Amino acid sequence: MTLLLDVKNLSKTYPAGSEKVRALQGVSFHLEEGQFASLMGPSGCGKSTLLHLLGGMEAPTAGEILFDGRPLSFGGDESLSLLRRNSIGFVFQFFNLLPHFTALENVEVPLLLKGEPPAAGRARALELLSKVGLDGKKDRRPSQLSGGEQQRVAIARALVNGPRLLLADEPTGNLDTGTGKAVLDLLRQVCLSERCAVLMATHSREASEWGDLIIMMRDGQINAIYPVRR
Image 1: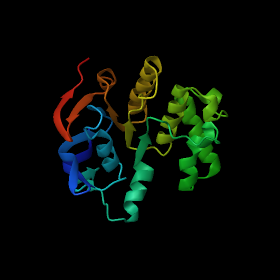
Image 2: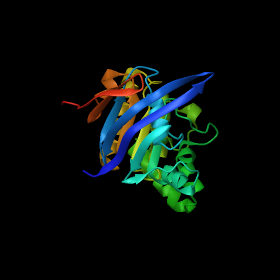
Image 3: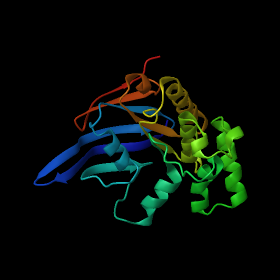
């Protein structure tokens, strides 16, 4: 496999009055192309902070992130925005769908912002809705969909630009057990069929075992990395 993400000695500190909160301390790991890794740990251990840094939404205090061998630049230039738009997809716990848009329109949005021709964008969005099992519900708005269906729309939207890395932050945290398992199965299928790497943050041991690799976090540090045994 090809090395996609290489994280080296990453740290993040936030000011808190006269004190400093060390959200991440010397985090290092790597992720290969097409690999599904679970970022496992209790609430407040730094999982979401790490995803924000890897997605280019925040700059680290120290350390380096290499994406496909190139360092992420946090200097405000256009390259980071292009990387986020074209190569990184995001899936959140609370779906973050546009309430007045249909499922199809929600999936199309990233392509419209990118300037894709409308016909090509619609074809790609329809393809992905079919892939996540929602081609028959493309005209429904989020309020007309179940939680699991909304998360499927969110996954389709995250994949519409053909990202090489999908970052998922507690994607089953707002779902019941059965629906959560269906979403995890979908993420695993996506990892294989779309040939993108998946890094999923979760505090659930059961959810973490759907990946190929488990990265254990506690108190802003990685304390173990091991493969999932099946």
